[in-house]
Amino acid sequence: MSRQFVTEAVMVAIYGQLLAPAAAVEYIVPYTTILELYEFRSSDEPLMDNPAEDKHVKEKVAELIEYLEEPLNKKKINRALQVPWAKSLPILFGNSVAFTIINGVDNAQYGEHFDPIETELLLTAQRENLPILTDQTDWIERIVEASVPVQVYDIEDFDFAVEGIYLP
Image (tube, helix red, strand yellow):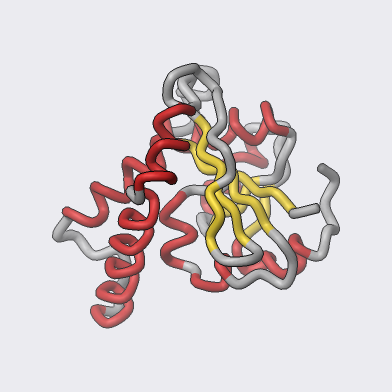
């Protein structure tokens, strides 16, 4: 059985270790974060401070977009977009990683404290009863301060989380 995490598509592009986990992993990815990949790809603003790292990450973003646009993968995603909160069939990436795209549509519940993407990630984690995986420590702090009932892992703790030390 694979470990499941809610995360943004860009996290997978930025952190290569997420595609080479020690155990099988499934990432539940809100569709709006897939749309963000297109914005990142076309933006002139850097994603990373180091120019070489920025170039590498933008290449990985482009590769992820290309992979998700392959006909079978695109078909799975488009089916999920027909119904609110529907999930795609798993999109396999290698032997131990799968992506499931979710069509989250509600972003008002936490709108005062979090931006729409953050809210969608929080609601997805709550609906699926899964932990969130992120690199944004300020967001983690705001989640704790707002007492949002979700479990959150910093990407630096990814290996620990994959070991199964979380309550699904």
